Length: 530
Image (cartoon, rainbow, N blue to C red):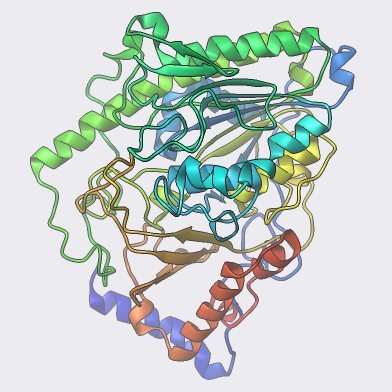
């Protein structure tokens, strides 16, 4: 790709402006499955075969549905190929093809998941320091406004297992705002580690008691979480109470530690090399410009780390299989939603970057969301735009209760219903660069450590505004790997319209306002319709 090609593409876009059509929001309307319809019509969910048969309902399963949410850490979509149980979930349930995170960073993303709010409403923009981490989530009272509290008030047994928020139980080098024995409100059962990235030699807070684990194979954290998850499901089913279970693994976050039984798997597997691998975009943003090409040693490191990530998700997949078997044995599988996702993605060599996240590229913000459960059509998919702020309202809607937040329930989509007027844009917010070396996600410039930005992602384009004045605009229909930044060539009137629409999302503060802001109908849509 070169500047001549960029200019040719731009001239085709800008030619439309000569027709007098002032921009109408570069986003495609959530309409048909093909993604070419606009306005109030919504994209249809694609249906496959009838949903797979579940065990006959029991007294417990005739009550409100159960929910099991498996949240992985830094899992990118290219790792699903190593997870047969997750692939089976896709065959048995619904895959969201356009699901994104509000920030490609652990704590801001998880805060959005718990509360259903954007970072500009949670106030959580980083993993540590005055703008993020567990300390700020706790100090701001955000723990009082989570889906766990809403579900528990509605009569659910609620369990949190694995990773909570960065800085929980210390590890940041800053004074602790709560003791290591602290258990947040809203949870019936609590099995959470503070620093579980090595998968061994960690401390687990188990309902307020501290339990140390060692370095034996049975201490491998993902396997411990699997055993605890099975125990919670069995106890909840015996009590005939609806339950919500979140199992948040540290895998496959660095240092990418697989279970001992998987440590030699996938010999020879290397990282994918899409067109963006070891390539800079045309007109890269200032923080990315000048990155040298990856050398052979860099590529070898990326391949080694990708192989370790593939090995580390095998235990996560085993855990999902154990959860499914337990639900079936307890005769509640037919009344349980099983949800699989990640807090953010990870780039590995794309754009000449060593492994990392935090960027607005799809490698970092576009993650899996797969749901299996009652009424979910098997083998189905939807291209309705969804975001992690939607999960809290979805979980509470399943539980027959509500939670005020910026997001929107996905429950109708889970059942194959195509609501009219679905959103056609999502918002990504990031503050940087991250300079806290105590942060487990600290990245050197080699991995990318971008400055603060706000971004708008639609089916058709990605638009980014940096605090330092830089901008990016990628035409996704013709440039799906985001390699041709057209922002320098866009007319001022188009840039002004994009800025206005992005600003509306940045300043929304409730579900109704955010839902309205995430329907972009301004100038740019005409460019894509013609």
